[in-house]
Image (cartoon, rainbow, N blue to C red; front, side, top):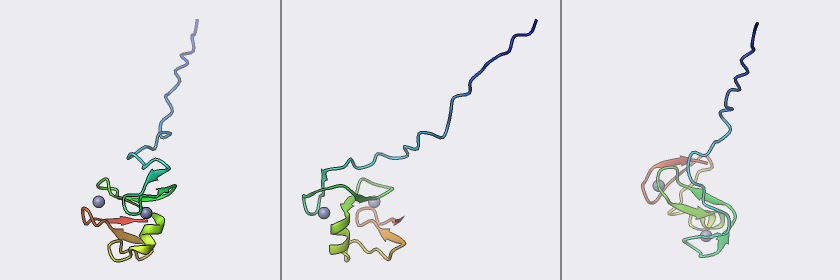
Length: 78
Ligand SMILES: [Zn+2]
Ligand SMILES: [Zn+2]
C-alpha cells in the first residue's frame, strides 16, 4: 500500500515587498501635491515626486542612473 504524500510546497518568491512603498496620492513633502510616482530612498524614508525631482535638480542630483538622497546621502539607483 502506497500513499502518495502530496506535500505542496509553499510558493516562494511571490512577495517582493522589500520595503514599504510610498502609497499613491501621498502628498509630496516638497510641493505638497499628491503624486502617483515617487522616487524613494532605499535607505531612509525620503521620497520626492517626479516633478520635484526634475525641478530640484540641485538637491536631487540625478544623472539618469543614480541619485543621491539628500537626507542620508546614500546613492540610489533609479
Ligand atoms: Zn513634489
Ligand atoms: Zn535616504
